[in-house]
Amino acid sequence: MKGLPQILTVYASSPIGVKLEVNDTAVNAFGVSTISEMNHQRWTAQQGDIGALAEFLGKQVQSVEVFSLALYEDEPQEAVDIQPFSRPLKGKHCFFTQQGELPEIHDRNLYAIGHHWPVGCSDQERAFCVLLERTLTLWHEGRPDNESRLALISDYGARLDRLGAHNFSYWDGDYLFAYSSKREDENIPLCFYQLHEHSVSFGDGHRLSINIEDGTDVVVVSSVDLIDGLEVNPIPPGTVACFKSGQLLDRCEPVAFWTADS
Image (cartoon, rainbow, N blue to C red; front, side):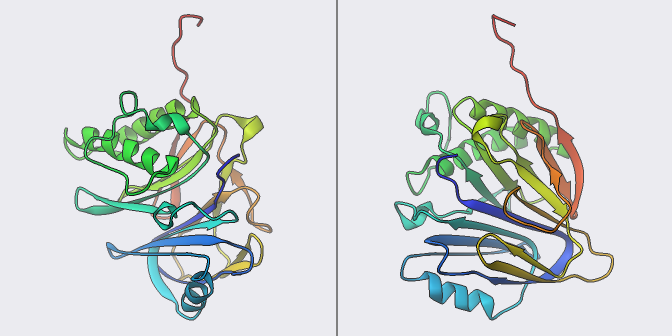
């Protein structure tokens, strides 16, 4: 898949302590977003700054409920293109990571963004703005339940799959959603792990050290090839998985659109 950052999101039912150790020789850019008691933090780094940010994050334990990471082998064109992308929506911070290139997403006549203007020029941030606009439309009718949100995000993922293979994870302030592309031949699918370990090694020499209290549920969503040694739960092609309080809550099977040839 083109434009592939490695993405990983951790979601816990109650605050956990997380320390990230990044092998700064194996990446050319990376970004981190966290949520702790509704407070949002975001860090990004590219060439020249990677070592300093890796050292900073490797020396402290952060208390978080949601932790999202994007690792780049190829440096994005601009610093503002480094994921995770974050925006406030209805009083809560949302963030989004996506794998895959979708050039046609910039057609505003087909993919409306409303007032959610991108800061950069990347396909991925534009896709996030499209999702926010669709989500805001749903919220105009009141606070939607998880089933309504899941249906919207499943439709969104399927429509974007027409443009190209893509995976994404999306924290909407209440739920974590993860979509795995239906284009199996072009895609490395996403999966999830119910975490019981206190450290996770992943990618090319990276590590998460996690302090988990008894009774806390923790789920990790990532590319299926990123983590070894844990029990894998694949997200089937074209499917959206919805997580709440560190556990799988529901999922929506692939959307099939009606066509004249059906």
